[in-house]
Amino acid sequence: MNLCDELIFTRRLVLRKMEAEDLPLFVLWSNSREAYGSYLTPERLIDAEALEGLKSGLFWNGSGRTYMIVLRQGPPIGTIHFWLRPEKQRTAVFSLKIALPEYRNGGYGTEAQKFLIMYLFERMEIQNVEVYTDIDNHVQQRCLQKLGFDIADTLAYEDQKVIRAGHLFRLDMPGFKRHPTYRYHYE
Image 1 (cartoon, helix red, strand yellow):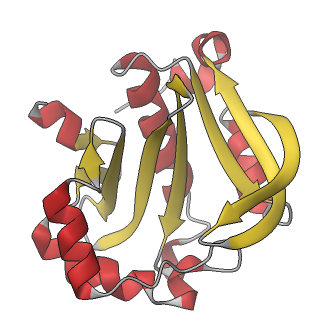
Image 2 (spheres, helix red, strand yellow; image 1 turned 90 degrees about the vertical axis):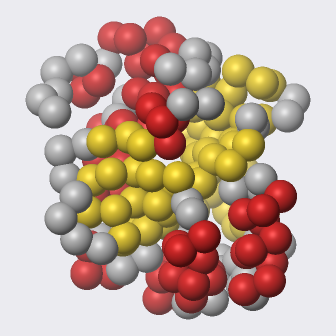
């Protein structure tokens, strides 16, 4: 793995590999209802669990990675995590958390997702990217549609042992290749 895998640059953000110095903030966010908003369930990590996860490769391995979302000229504002589906190795699933409410609805989540999606298709040669979203999370649903995703299914899914009703959105490689969002950008 090289440095290109550990850093993804966008116009306003850097998605970077989570490091030991990020753990106190990561644990704080994992216990904050405000950081998760209405549509995600807090993980409720403790310091020892987070440290063990970092040491064991839980947050960064061949089948999944957790990036801190950091403003280029400012603080970390959230996380974005992807993992490969065990039953379909060419399919990645991701989840996004803009943990600081004052940075929500400013396009940061869209920007982070767009560049992670580009990384997954172009560098990791993924064939499908999927996202689960709460049925009432209309902001995320509009964002995903803007990024070329279609609803693949409406279903119940598990989020930290909480069963939620939601949609599974999917973008496949042909859809990625033809979508103008990924072709016309200036970075």
